[in-house]
Length: 161
Ligand code: HEM
Ligand code: HEM
Image 1 (spheres, rainbow, N blue to C red):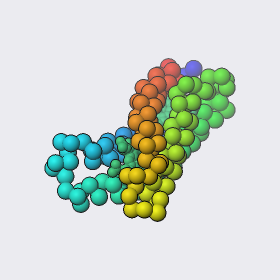
Image 2: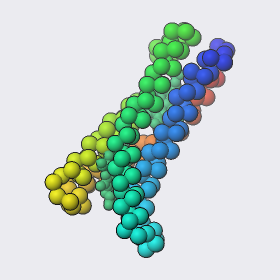
Image 3: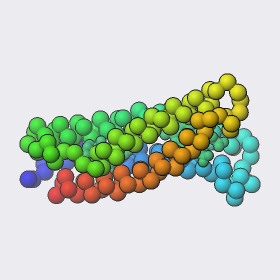
Image 4: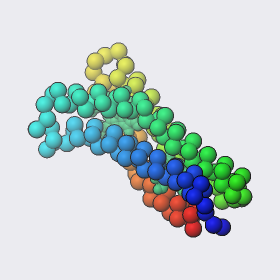
């Protein structure tokens, strides 16, 4: 099967947006982790810490829509390949795609636990029960993200090949 210019543009939109989203999620994770890192804490003022935390919260609220947008681009490419390029349905789903759906669920639950942690009436989110969950899913998400990006590259080779 040969791939034309329009086909390539439709197929490449999702991987490009996916890489940008993966970078965004990684930054979201690494910035908040730096608050805890001992070497960084000593050089960080309380204002800088607050700024990182505020940014973490506003960006975190946008994360589910960003991942959903990336998946919408993937589905658009799937529909295009299915209808215009006559690719059979069995070739349109992959492990990469299932893990992508799992990432969306994880991102939504991060946004939910994050919100309820900061809105739980007390100022002290450190003691909020959702914090443990937020921390655990947050860690697991980075492994999930790394696998998705790796499998995404393999999927791209498969689709363009
Ligand atoms: C936030 C990150 C990402 C998410 C949530 C995600 C999710 C998905 C989903 C749900 C599909 C459709 C199901 C399937 O084909 O199995 C898909 C397809 C695909 N993804 Fe991703 N993906 C992400 C990042 C990437 C990256 C970084 C690449 C490549 C560098 C990539 C390459 C592909 C390719 C080539 C397809 C097939 C599209 C087609 O059939 O035309 N993805 N992705
Ligand atoms: C995709 C979205 C998100 C990701 C990947 C993420 C990730 C993380 C991670 C990895 C931590 C550090 C946990 C630890 O090791 O103890 C953290 C802490 C935190 N997150 Fe999020 N988060 C997200 C969204 C949100 C949202 C939407 C809010 C609030 C509206 C939020 C509020 C917080 C707070 C208050 C902390 C505690 C900071 C501290 O330890 O001082 N997060 N988040």
